[in-house]
Length: 274
Image (cartoon, rainbow, N blue to C red; front, side, top):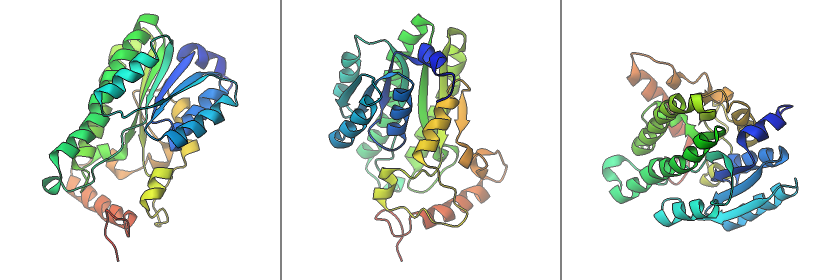
């Protein structure tokens, strides 16, 4: 954070809710907000990493609540709303939109694809409808959706995931228009390849020549610094990616991206192997 910490606490405090706040970029968001004096509600499925991040943030002297929930379920959403009913939430960050079913569409399971849609569309919309309404009434706050470059172009095994990420970007732009006069900031933070624990567990090849890679701490710092600069901010490491620039020859960009993704997935369980 910067010398504007006091202003940010007034705008985004006294509490922030981070869905997907246990590790990687979410954990770095949490640490930076804790340093700025903002109390936290951290939401994630994995109890161990969630407790570790909560403990790290408490060391900065803020209050932290931990919620171990499944964000795909109605019960999970209701638990978040209930657990924050007594709090003034000034910032909501949705960092939980993963691709939970990587498969070619016609070979995939429709129920599993529906879970991708629920995690990336249904749940964040319900939570933003709740928290955003309260922020609008109070005339201050911030809403951040963590997006992906995948939402700028189609890719094999990401047909549904790319589609939902495109949706959230356009949704964020409309929401930004609606809330700009109510002093509620809206930002879609677009990430590219990032060296998170989840991506490392998958076994992605981060060492491809010419493939830019972001670090979680840098992403979180840049995202919070641009929260007031919505509606969309692409992480600077990936801002020159050809997919974000309009072109008439979409097939050329899609094929070039597909080739690079195959190298990225080389040797992983869901990708090609030698």
